Length: 274
Ligand SMILES: NC(=O)c1ccc[n+]([C@@H]2O[C@H](COP(=O)([O-])OP(=O)(O)OC[C@H]3O[C@@H](n4cnc5c(N)ncnc54)[C@H](O)[C@@H]3O)[C@@H](O)[C@H]2O)c1
Image (cartoon, rainbow, N blue to C red; front, side):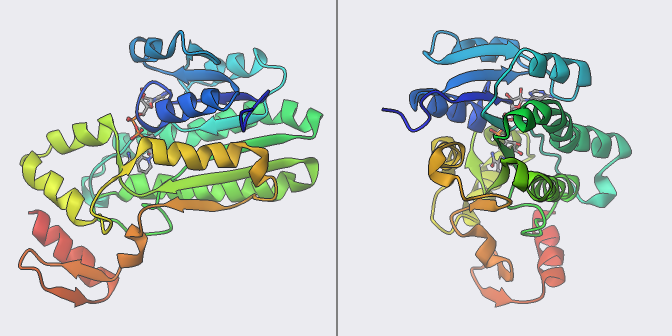
């Protein structure tokens, strides 16, 4: 018997990385999964997996999101995973970067939740899981200005939905990973001027000595999607290997550790990256 037997689940960003691992884990636990993504080619790789059907959807497009919701009468779990990482401080974040990031990371969740909630409310039962990040209101991270702003908004949206609809049988939680080894993370490392150094920098902040895997995030999502978590709502589920605990510590290249205020840390990290 699976932990998600009989549950109907719709998720976004299923073509690769965390979304793909979650779609596979949901199906393995007995759910009927509609796995969506903007990338039809990669999404096809999920075709043929028992329990999964795929559909190309751009979650920033209202008509596409509403059409997806119309196709589903009963949805037990909605998992909003689509996201984009922009690198830079506020000074290097152009208006177009800001708008694009907020559209993919936040407006998409607004559209999806708004489209799927009415039928959940009719049934007086529904479960929404949103993908946030530790880089948000939880932890200040260098060069992630609009990304962190967008993920803080996801945490706010999650708590707002949880509070508004708790008495109508709806629960809503978000997942806040640290650094997860996914194709997009590898791509972002490769895109840096010195990929080897960039990889070392990513590893230096992993106090566990390794990155999180997409499958580890999927285990947490299975728990949130299942009836094992029916009393859990309005929460930020952190899965970061303790990364957030080190917010006041600066690791110099020489190896010294210095405790200081966060502004000092940001200043030093910016200098280190130059
Ligand atoms: N990888 C990490 O270290 C990490 C850490 C914390 C949070 N997250 C969050 O987890 C989520 C997934 O991250 P990942 O690293 O697996 O990403 P990824 O880039 O590997 O996958 C993202 C997927 O989203 C899809 N997508 C992008 N725009 C879309 C759109 N408009 N409509 C539909 N699909 C769209 C892409 O095609 C891709 O398949 C994101 O929200 C990300 O911010 C990732």
